[in-house]
Each structure stands twice: as C-alpha cells, then as structure tokens.
Image (cartoon, rainbow over all chains, first blue to last red; front, side, top):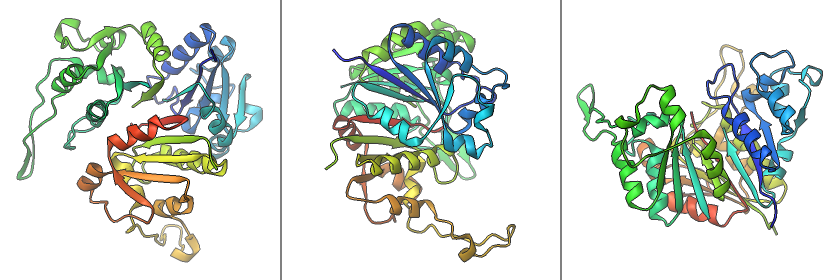
Amino acid sequence: MSQTRYVFIESRDPFDSADAGFVPDAATALHARGRPVTVFLVQNGVLATRARARGSHLARLAEAGVAVLADDFSLRERGIEPAELREGVQPASIDALVDLIVRPDTKTLWH
Amino acid sequence: MRILNIVESAYRGTLEEQDDTVLWLSRALKNAGADLTVVLRGNAVNYAVRQDCPPLTIGRTTIQHPARPNEYLAKLQAKGAKVYVVAEDLVERGIAAQGCVPEAEPLSRADLVDLLEAHDQIWHW
Amino acid sequence: MADRTLTLAIMDAPYEAAASTTAFRIIGAALAKDIRVNVFAYEGAVALTMKDQAPHANPVKGTSVEEEAHPTTKDLVAALMAPQLRWVNCGLCVDERGTGNWIEGVTRGGPADFFAMAMESTATLVIPTR
C-alpha cells in the first residue's frame, strides 16, 4: 500500500492569527505516525520565516522533521531575503506546490 | 471517496440566504451523494451551542428567516453525516458541553488527526 | 492530453484577499503543466468573472488607464481560459450577487458540480475565505 502524504498550505501567520498552532500540531502528529508531511507557507504565512521572528512555530516543525517550504513570490513580495530565513525553511515555487498536491495519495489542506 | 469537511469560519453569512454557506454546502454535498463527515473547530464550535438566531432588520427590510445552525447540524446527521465538535475549542470559549446540541459529538484535537487519516479528502473551510 | 486533474474551490471576492492571487497562480501553474483544472467559484468568487469590470486611471499615482494597463480579475480568468480549464460559478451565489454577466468560457453550476469535479480529480483543494 502506498504511503499517504500530507501537504498543509499555511496562509496565516502567528502575529495575526490565534490559530497558528493548528498546522504545526497536526503536521507534527502526522509526521510522528510516519507520514511524509510538507508545510508550504504562502502569503502572510511567510512572515514567520525570518530567523529572528518571535512566536514562530517553524522551529518545532523543522525539529520534528517536517519539510517546510516558503513561497518564493510571497517572500519577495515581503522583502524577505534568503539569508534571513530560519534554518530548515526552503524557498519554493508555486510550481513546486502544484507538483506536491497532484501527487498520488496526497491530502492537501489549506489553512 | 470519504470527505472530511472541517468548518472553522463562523457567523459570516448573516446576510446570506444560505446562512452558513459551508454547512449549507455540506448539506448539498450530502444530497449529491457525498460520504461526508463534518468537524466544527475554532469559532465554528459555537454552532453546536443551543441557539436561536434573531431576525435582522435593516432600514425597512427584515431578514425574516435567520440562520438555524442547530437545525443544519441535525439535518446533516439525519442525512447520515457524522458531525463532530472539537472539545478543546469549546473549553477555550467557555462553552459547557451540556449547552450543546447532541448531534455534535465532542472530539479531541488528538482524535482529529485520526479523522484526517480516515478520510480521502480534507476540505478546511 | 492531460492525465491529471486538479479541482479548486475558491470563495473570495475580487481584490479583497491574498488567497485570490495564490489561487490564480496555482491555476496558471497547473495549466502550464498540462494538468486539467476545474474551478468551482463559490460565494464572492463568482464576481471574479464579471464582464462589466473596467480598469481605471489612478489620480493618486497620476496615471492614466493606458499607463496603468492593469488587468481586472476577469482579464486574469480570460488569460487562463483554455480547453483544459473548466470554470463553474455557483448559480445561487451568482443570483444574489448579480454577477451573471460573465466572460466567455464560464458556466453556471452548483455544489453537485463541485462534488462531481472532485470525484473525478487527482486532487481537490479548497481555498476558504476568512
């Protein structure tokens, strides 16, 4: 049986949303069950990617082994340079997101 | 295909004839034959509270038929959809379980992950 | 011939949410990969295709319509329109918003169409409104 993969598209940031823990909680729980999980940050979700950003859950995701990608357009739009990104966050294109979500056995949730 | 409809956004649709447009959509999907489970989380857990939404008058016009979220949940269940409400989100909002309608079964955040696994599609609204 | 299909449900009215931008980018990227795309436009998203949208000059920026050359959302949909793209506006949402005068290639439908599209798709993505 093929492995179910999960993609969480996170559009919210921890500075504006009290629900910013939902994706890290679900993603780390699924990863702990052995599921491949990717969190794709988009829009203001990338505001949490600066290494010096406070209140970000991204370190928890990276430590848990969850892949964290950040939409390159959203990063550029917000003037976030690659050198500013916290460890474990990789810039990625919208093409990469599409590739992720159309893979077989993949469930995608937008938050 | 088993569909998990996670409803988070709440009380946006007061002006809309369909009331909460995701609960309405859920009913429509059931009518179309969908194998559907509904989870209320975030502020949408308040739909499980026993409530009687008031009519709304704007100028000389009144919306005579306000939303009936409890009824929507009951009708979803009657159609065969399982309806859950995230327990921790109720507690965070100071909502006591005894004030909720029986159609919404409490579910822990941990058990929500089981539902993510058990469904083929996860649609978060 | 495309052998993968992506269905999206979108909800936001034009210009009000960043999610619309991302939705258009996803649709464009998918079509460029020869993926068939179904769009179910629900609630405010049914206004994305309104033929009556018009560009404008910008007195704050001091630019003319020609200088702005700014596409409206209907122009974005038209730019994406292709045989592989099926765009369905939720009919009841259209009625209550008066957005029935839409560009070519768009059709009227409802939740049953969304369900049918999802059933036939490789993947379905719901982009909610807030």
